[in-house]
Image 1 (cartoon, rainbow, N blue to C red):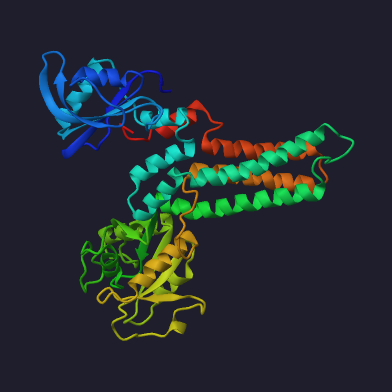
Image 2: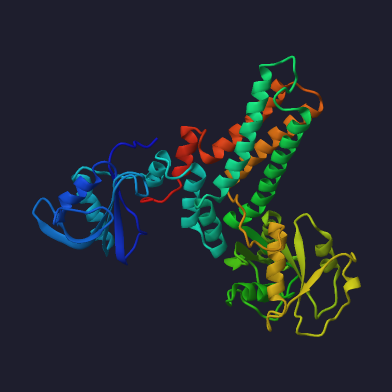
Length: 452
């Protein structure tokens, strides 16, 4: 695991040329290392200072920089931090890092600055993970959900449930001192009510987290249908570019085309597939196989049926197969409809009419994709949970509370009920990092970028 009592340095801005690049120092010798390199060799806390950065070996000027000292504990890491804003040449920034290392710092490992913030109580573990999510966000909704977690939305929700669990645990433990009384400090009705409330809160959090995972991780959506149904036209319309070749010749698409697109704030990997039919050559056969594979691994499929051509047996077969959740999209809505809804199959199948040419129905389709993937109509308030690790631990706590409620209903003693309540508390403490292992911390912080 990381050493946390020395001084570390790294470039804190992305690789590549830019107007400005930042080199960050953190640790007890940050100011001493920085002042070895700058002239004048003095800094004032929380003041940006324009200075010349020198190579101490020959006093040659390396760059004119702005150095800012964040005195402990009022810094990102809670330690002494100096940030050097220099011109954004990668060569120049690397030289500054090399000079800082020569002056006594060492190169930081990925995530080490945020790890130090966690160790010094500036962030809990859930907030630290939100930092990485915020950096990785590719849609505004992902960024908003990550920022809410960084601000403590999840921490607050967990703390409220944990406080209720702590109170329940205290009453149950106190009752153990009076075994002849039976739930002396918390009567059975009160205990049952408290447990039901906690279980309901955990269930709400878990339900919220399933939508949250879709926001954080994104999902794959496959566009399927028979040849020339309008799949590629729909693909192009949804991504806003002519990515797929569109012709009147059936079977134009032979391979999978994928594109990342923002649909209502969700990072969707949209997959355009070959038309599903009996293949006429080896190349088309491989395309059809890949199309079926893409359908199987997708979270949602868009079944495209040509609204301007008669319904076929294949169309009905696509609609009848719900091995993967799907939406039925009737294409070419700008042309006269060639079939009636009752020809499609089951009466309860809902369809969405769209036109790639005019844009009709595309907004409604985006909305329906969002609802299908999140099971929510909107996300005015982003879910408190977006992380798979957090959701798994909430599920663990929920299972423990369900066992505790069942034990209570079966007339179990306080000691047996308390065992499951304690297990629920342990699971929640792993989310915030109050109880965790070095291996887990290494795994979490290793995915951070260098300099953060």
